[in-house]
Length: 169
Image 1 (cartoon, one colour):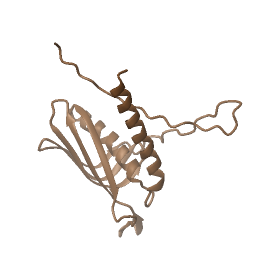
Image 2: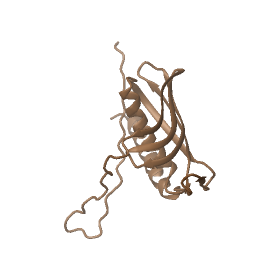
Image 3: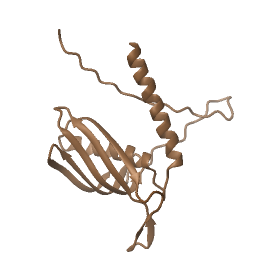
Image 4: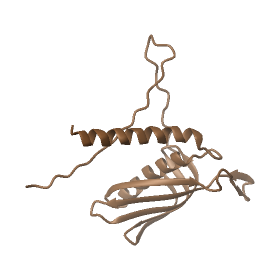
């Protein structure tokens, strides 16, 4: 593997590890900006592809509104965090993808609830209050420990997919 690819993979690995570490420091009212952005990225990409958009890439960021404060939901009488989500990407034919809106609930790796709109170029592809399957079972997190190694812990693995295109000579 060429040196520049190894460096790129190393940088992406460090960024991924930093994001995982930041998730532990950032929850507000049960949501964290990292888990909201990762889950929104996953379910928005799936929805766009289901609607016929060929997604080259999509990258989402999220910010918990209020800098650590929650918003009150009068009808439910409970406190709920709100995250502002901003996703940017490109289609296979190089059109801009924007997914923006508010997330009021995130169920790890399964769904987000709120008010989200996706546009490709200037065409609205979807406007949704729920993305994903909120009834799907939780992802399993119980990693069995190797036998004979009491106290051993699973390691963090970062998977990076790199797509390269080569033009003929």
